[in-house]
Length: 291
Image 1: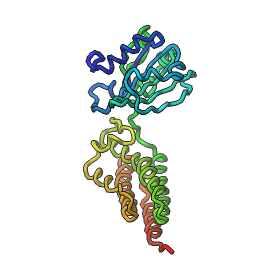
Image 2 (image 1 turned 60 degrees about the vertical axis):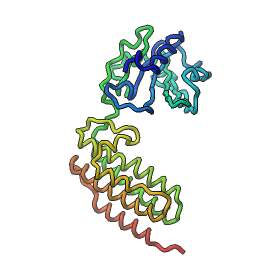
Image 3 (image 1 turned 90 degrees about the vertical axis):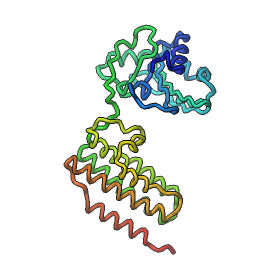
């Protein structure tokens, strides 16, 4: 969609055009990718290139020019390419969300002379405003950034070992009836960190390592086979203790099935003996009597 047809993009361009310090504005992420799937909650990710960024950091009133700010995450000032940059992740009351990244002109100049684009641009970008032709040296995006590469044997084995190691923490916390740390280890560490990684590899094998899985696996539901997705859903439980024990063992089952297939496709070995010993240990912990 062109900036002329999108009122938000046109508003951004008009805003940048009226500010002498703003020299370039670049749209990135989903809205800059041709034929990307958009919905009412799709963010506007905009890089604002200015002669000086600190005034925009010290005075945030300019954010209100796009609407009433509901909540704001302030990414701190930090060096990049030897120059300070920052970001404001801005949620407006009317539902609009704009992620502003502020770069000094020097960063854009250095990227223009670099043979490789940073991932945030290589994933897809579109120049909205360029007052001085500073963006003309940017290489075109390949749209390949953030697509995973096949793991080497060590990465695969480490993921398997760390997944099973975390199961022992879940079992201990469930036995103690400590819900919050148990859920942290089960739903975040085991599943978000390790099971999700294995599911992404499983998905990429099926797609030829050509698709982006999305942040935190948000694209998995549409790309996994229905049976695997249903099994994954079964690993989520509420607060009931017994339900969480079931979810723990279901998580192991899902991980086993996916990890074995990944191992076969990549020519690696799945540690059946490790899994059996860990499951036996989990069952022993579950059955320890409480005094």
